Image (cartoon, rainbow, N blue to C red; front, side, top):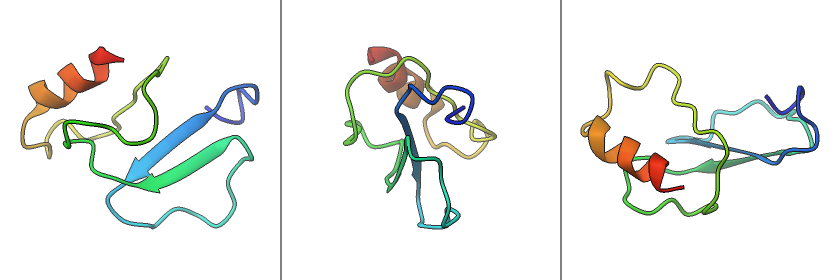
Length: 70
């Protein structure tokens, strides 16, 4: 997404710091938990993408409510 839209700021999160060393200049990666009620790295998102996470989230409905707040 970041390479296709270089004008965008892309925020990525993971529970551990396993991201590659090279990332496009418009990407910021943070160690964070999407199941926390407040997301710490922004308050306005145009797209929220959860790849392969529906089966591992404790409370999918709550995470989706948080995502739709933005």
